[in-house]
Image (cartoon, rainbow, N blue to C red; front, side, top):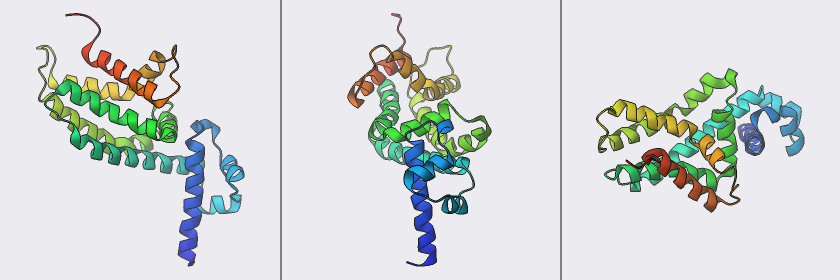
Length: 205
């Protein structure tokens, strides 16, 4: 193994250890010492390649958004945009299925977006920008097919749906608090219920 290969192997080992820790614990709980002690990494090697837990956390967040974007891009090709309500519901549910399949990513997402460390805000939002732009393009295409109420402009509808994307998981968490679904299938079913109410409302018109 060449020196470069050894360096890449060391960095990959540290990164995988960081993914395991940030994927299991909130950001504020994870420390460099914890990563080292739990994964048999010397502090000398750790600090030779990474200067702080923030650097490692941002690498994990970057990997999260890249994985999420790739998954949604691949899976969303099957969505028929002509049926706007179904298209939006299916698009939102792609993210829920991604997290149901990879629970560690959900923990990192919660640390990054729901309990965002304020000093990392600018970095996190920049890492999320490609996903946000992808979401915006999809929503604009779907909204163009929607019959909006006369008082609702397409721009406002897009902003509303983008806002839902940001807060949906907090709403779902509160909605499920009483029943506390234990498995991914139950959580996905609850997510569909919440989405239907958010998109269609609860009052008979």
